[in-house]
Length: 415
Image 1: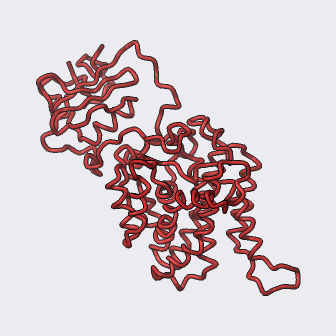
Image 2 (image 1 turned 120 degrees about the vertical axis):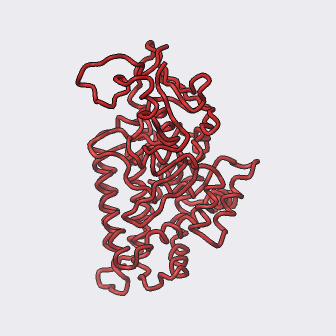
């Protein structure tokens, strides 16, 4: 094993602050870091944290041929050692590299500021409950989340709440890149907006929704016309489905991690951009917190789908599942059923001045936008929707001032 950044002379082109040109006495003042940077840099080298209590000088990360550990008898210093026999990191293990993505390592979901959304903490059930309560002060949705996590019934799942990830986060993939893997910010991250059942049922119910709004005959002008954006979503969905089999095919999409077609990613990204532009226009017209309340109204109802889907199947009331998993398909049927409740919730929240047709159309755009976001990112470990995610780092170690010194925490990388 060899120590990374061991003191050795270098060429004159080496930056003046390189520790390779410093004396042992000078190194500590130039290698101070933060808990945040320490954690992130280890992960970006392909290591996994097995212990992370740096305030006590106890931490260890290993993987990809590296190990980061405290220096002997100097617990507030560290060294990175490398195994020269280690194989290089494979592309599918790489994460998107950005400060926003770094937050996910700590169980923090970055909110999209264009739609006036804050960051949301979701790394553990306490954070999830706090976040849900901030969106639904009645507490009913928070209680439902707790009920769903009963020890004898799906203790690792956050049914419905996981929708907050594609609905609240900004576009995190870098344009022009096929690196789409993200850290997992919560114990459970997948949901109806990731599954093929959700896509297929949404497509069929959208067609029914548009048909219900169009005049029954050419001479019947008593029914309101179909909303413009609902028609746009229908046509854009059809276009993506026709051009890219991985649009609806969940298994195919998830088999392509950091090697998805750039053409596919760009097409989904462009559709996401168009949806965002529409929702942003609504926030300008009706108020900066319009979208946040629409998302909250959806989540408040979405947390109910799991139990209600199984109850409907038990009572032989399930709808067409198109040959797919029936309970998940029924879940998306329930999402459409909840649309009336979403409209009612928006009115109760003070948005009664927004036409009902506009609210329904905005919900359609929001859900379609969630589909587009998921196809531009990957964070699922396998196909088991309730498989526990890897342990996240405690959110209290995340600092917006990463890169600045934290008092009393000096790092040294040398023999």
